[in-house]
Structure formats: structure tokens, C-alpha cells
Length: 120
Image 1 (cartoon, rainbow, N blue to C red):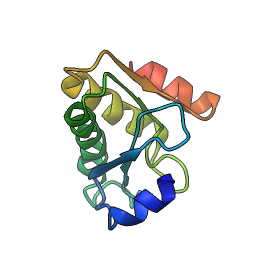
Image 2: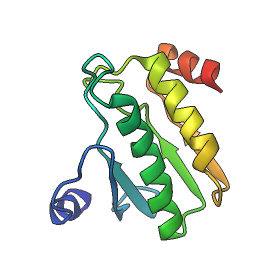
Image 3: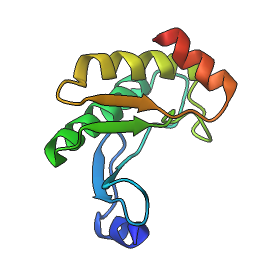
Image 4: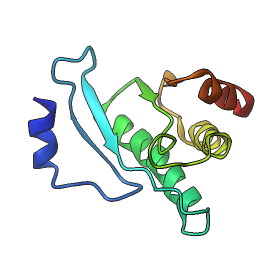
């Protein structure tokens, strides 16, 4: 169901965010965002990554969500350096999370967890 809804979104620009229902997941919504591919840091990657988090938080508030969970956006196949991504994600969430009761980072390994814990 979520994939069918994604097709109706007509894509999503890097740094933007759009929502679908949660389908069969135990969440009311899924907010989709497209992170930047790491190209060395000089192609606007930090601003685009911050925008992913900012726009996701904006969309969550528009939907009336009270909580939101983020993965380590762009840190997988997109190659974003984890420590730098963590600093950007944490700083953006700290600045922009007003109106939400809980924001979580759901991370896929110890290295990523450690980088986000250090940024917090």
C-alpha cells in the first residue's frame, strides 16, 4: 500500500519530504525524504541534509504527529560521513523539533549509534 502511494507522490526532490499513510506499519504516517549523495561536501550536501530533517519535521507538524523517527539519512549507499551527518541531524532536530513530544534516531549499527550519541 505504501509503495502504491509513493507512486502518487510523483517523486521527491533532494532535501524535500512528503508523506504517505503508514500502510500496515504500526505508524499512522511515513515521511519520505531524499538525502544527498556525498560528493565531498562542496556540492551543497550539508544544506540538503539539514533540509531533509527540517522538511520532515515540518511535514510531521502539518500532519499533527507527536513523534518522529529518523534513520541516519544518506549514511548508507549515499556515502555521507556518519559523524558529520550526525552533527547536522542532531543540530537541525534541536533547532526545529518544537511541537513534537519525541524525536528518535533509529540507527543501524554501533558506529552510527556512537556518532549520533557523540553529537547529542
